[in-house]
Structures are given as C-alpha cells and as structure tokens.
Length: 190
Image (tube, rainbow, N blue to C red; front, side, top):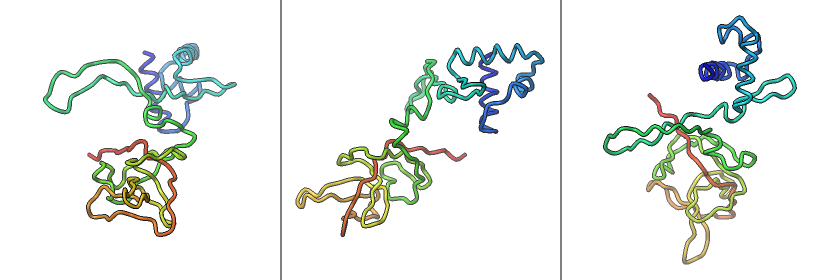
C-alpha cells in the first residue's frame, strides 16, 4: 500500500512540480479519513522519501530513486538477476552538484566517444583535466566539447574530435578548460 501511494505522489509531483496538500491526498489516495493520510505521511517521513520543514512537505533524493532490478547481459539471453536496490540518477551521475552543469550537445564531433547530437552532458567545473578527458573548453574565444590532448614534440595542448571529419584544434591565442564531462545522458526515441 505504501509503494502504491508513493507512486501516486511521484506522478502528482511530476505533473505539478510540488507535493499535494493533505486535502489533495484524500482524493489521490481515494480515502475519506485524514488519519489515513497522516499515517501515510508519517511512514514516508520515517522511510526517508519526504521531509517536513515547518508545515511544508518536500521530496528527498530518495523520493526520486529508481529500483535497480539487477544486471542483464547484452550478449546471449539468460534469466535476469533480481536484486532490489534503489538508485537516484543525480547521485549516480553527479559527483558535486554545486559545480556541475548540464549542456545539450550540438554537433557530431564526439560520435566516436558515443556522444551524439542532442545528448545531455554533465560537466563538472574546476575538475582537473587529464589528458584523454572530454572537456568543455574555450579555444580562441569559442566554446567546444573535445578530447584534451598534448603534442609530444611541441609539448603544447590541443583539442581532438572523436570523428575523423574534424581536424585537431590547436589554439591560435589561448585555450581555457572550463570543466570535464562526467556523464552523458541520452533519451532513446521510440
């Protein structure tokens, strides 16, 4: 019962970007007893799905977590393992929410790295970039996502695409690294 009610709250939150009032919960849960609503809220508070600040209820990161059913091979079919764990995508994809940003990718210069036009990338600002990292950089006053490389002969840094249709990008004036790509998000279109 609590899972069913939690799912109803999640649907409401997705639609209205807020949790319902106690009165709205009577309708959502199809109950006439306010006591039933209070018991549900207490259980959700105890389980850590919501928090109460004064009289206001708000969702926690656990509220948005998704069930991990286990692993499934992408090779030959076998019975999938069921392993009940929960995961919030923001905790999985974002190491530091204070210094992380989302950008929509435009172009095809990183298709060799699996980053496609229209994907979202999570960029962590002020992350120390290592050679081979995909970085958000400003090169000669133009912003781009590319792979950080270093020329062994001249010892100069440059940016490289992951698409043979693009040449290496050497700075004419300057290159600044803004951050490092930490994750790629793609919604599959059906």
